[in-house]
Image 1 (cartoon, rainbow, N blue to C red):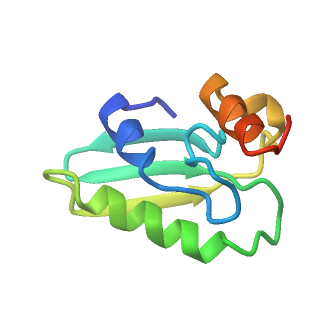
Image 2 (image 1 turned 30 degrees about the horizontal axis):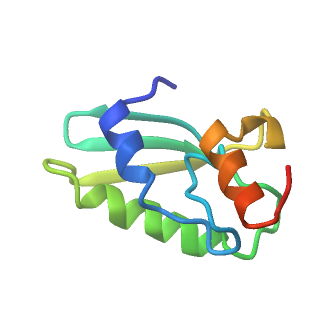
Length: 103
């Protein structure tokens, strides 16, 4: 799924509740695309059974609905390809290292 930069920037406001890092820099967002007033998001988690699953889905939806003209958000949870530390951005790696969570 293509990435829509402005929406990706908005998702940087969504923090992982278990780590001091946003979901974009953590590499959880696989895609975000806007069609009219609807935004489609492909999102993964670091592990199946993630305790923050519902919390993050709610935060993603709420944050995107604050964007001008966004009236509907469809989130698809995807597991392929599986998340790995290789998906971290440079800023994500720096943040985790700063907090002593070396990657």
